[in-house]
Image 1 (tube, one colour):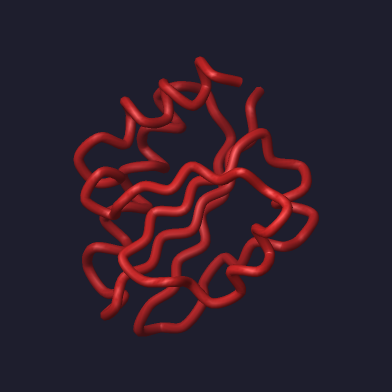
Image 2 (cartoon, rainbow, N blue to C red):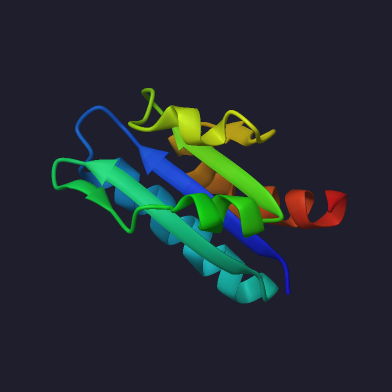
Length: 102
């Protein structure tokens, strides 16, 4: 099973952050992909990705509207950078593309 980690963050960190995370989680479940998603928003950082999570991941997705806290954690990665809008509207298509590339 492929392992993917993601970070979703927007300026307010309310609706769009969690809509993007929900879309990616739903898509991962449909595709049989393991995913862990960190959200950053009004509530602070939730479900924070560890260095181990990132190192063990087959792919890293950054669904961003602003630069997330702890961006240096991804310095050794080649993340897939997408917008929150793309994550919300095209989550399944994006995950299918990533899995096919792996």
